Amino acid sequence: MKKKNFGFTLLELLVVISIIGLLVAMGAVAFTTAQKRGRDSKRRGDMKATQSAFEQYYADNGAYSTTCSAMATGYMPGGLPEDPKPSESYTMNCAADAYCICALVEDSGNGNAAAPAALSTICDYSGAPQDYFCVNNLQ
Image (tube, rainbow, N blue to C red; front, side, top):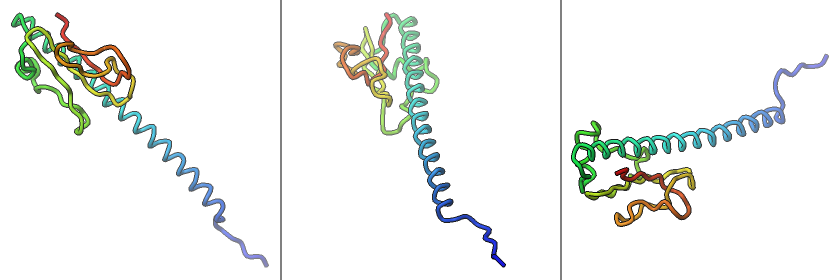
């Protein structure tokens, strides 16, 4: 009589484990990309919300404040927004006649500005790479 084997061979187990490993690796890459896009969307939203608050401040006062935090007081209930990644921060330059707010985006090259510039030029929307998303005064 022949003995029956109820199990998997070593080769079958290695193939299954390899396939599972590949699927997990692809899922991790997709998840990381989705997280980066989510943080970039939040940055863009924060920039637009801050721009709206600063423009409301201008409409009420006839000029911008020289300190960015002063314009946020009363117009942004939670205060100035913070970058969703703790190691990064937003760059803000404010003057009585202009302001520029920039955030470094993680999806390199998909911003609208090359770098946050000095207040004299407000925002640098020329050049490459376009690694920053910036907003500036509308008035």
